[in-house]
Length: 198
Image (cartoon, rainbow, N blue to C red):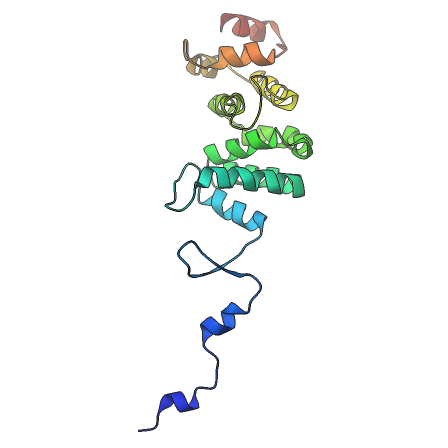
């Protein structure tokens, strides 16, 4: 029998991978590939790994850092990612989180103002958006950024009676609190009566 190793002229795969510039070690010490920030954020957002704990890192803080990094590098792409995850992947928390962090990044604000109607489609999205901003997790005071107030006020003007009553929520954080924070201007008498009722 002829020894097979004698004819093996190729270098082992592990040795060839070690020389690649995008190879690193993962948390377990195995080979892993480094992706750029956009690719990492897109895959994390698409998998909806927000608030998921890995045994080696906190994914929530990682996502926040990635959103801030990508928001400063390519703000338009970040807002398009939020729109895609909301409308095509039908996720809710991840795009709202991206929008909340983007509201704190000056480079993202003009793109967020244009795309917010496709990200924050329901009244409870607005509530979650405002709650994330007021949570002080993103380094804000109790005041909302002006772009967030403008977005919420515009979206509140599209509110009908059924959804307004549905998301009123009594004493907890609800639509009436958004109205007090953002002061939307009612476009007709019906809207004015609805806002005063809430």
